[in-house]
Length: 180
Ligand SMILES: C[S@@+](CC[C@H](N)C(=O)[O-])C[C@H]1O[C@@H](n2cnc3c(N)ncnc32)[C@H](O)[C@@H]1O
Image (cartoon, rainbow, N blue to C red):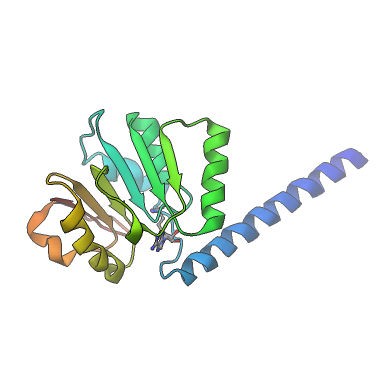
């Protein structure tokens, strides 16, 4: 009986620590300018049904949060998927999950995506504030090869409107697809 009580207390403590880390992650990301708000898991199939991946594709999530997109893409399409995240707590979480799940196709960088080489990416995903996305625009135009797909969840990329290939008007966020 005593052992059961201790086990329950340990589980509750772990849940409490997990909740605390989750909210601390949100606060830290807020300091970097974009809060950590993950894309809903139930939206992922709808969003990526729009894309025809091939084995040579390389997926990048700029501001990858808890890494759910790189894990999802690598598992479902068996392609290389990269997450780039500034928040150290989220980065450590992703590395731990990679170790736990033995996912070889995912890779995580703790980096500011403004200082990242985007040339290897063939599909880039963004769930960021519009002003941040607009600041990324010159980088896309300078570094990304023709044909690179850019998916913006939540906000249109006004300067890329002429290159929009599809739109998914979903709730709570629409998703916009562009091809450079
Ligand atoms: C709205 S969340 C999206 C998380 C994930 N892409 C998803 O859809 O589930 C945005 C993330 O971008 C990260 N971020 C903001 N600015 C960044 C920067 N300059 N470089 C790298 N990560 C950044 C934040 O820490 C946050 O985790």
